[in-house]
Image (cartoon, rainbow, N blue to C red; front, side, top):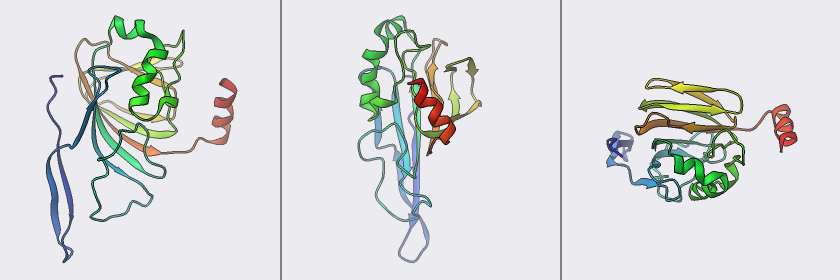
Length: 193
């Protein structure tokens, strides 16, 4: 992809409580999915509790790549999404589930034959998505919205996919917050199957 590398600065505290730079440089975890070439996850940070511990702990991005945020936690990442291709759509949902397996959440895929997009998925989280560069179309069960730089999507656990129909790479920033479905919504989702 032709998008620039992400530069990350992480702060911390010295032994006297003074603010210091803990790390300054490229992201240590950048992964291109094998099952969906051109899709690149740039892992920035995550927290594993609420309230989040304010400490000098280890870099939480140095582990397996996971789609959802940790339980009671958050995750921030950039994702580069290549243009949709006829080959992507021809592969179908079953083949593309491998991409969700690579990001530790094969169960997030909700796509099936006849789905609106082969990468339809859902997580039990509130996700803030900010388009940084390029253009994406948010595809929902009913309807879709074209998102350009500066568009912010508040994704509240809904079934969706990101279609890139622009012919150019797109970069979107996500902040994911662990969530729990409202019981009425959970019941409706269970009825849908």
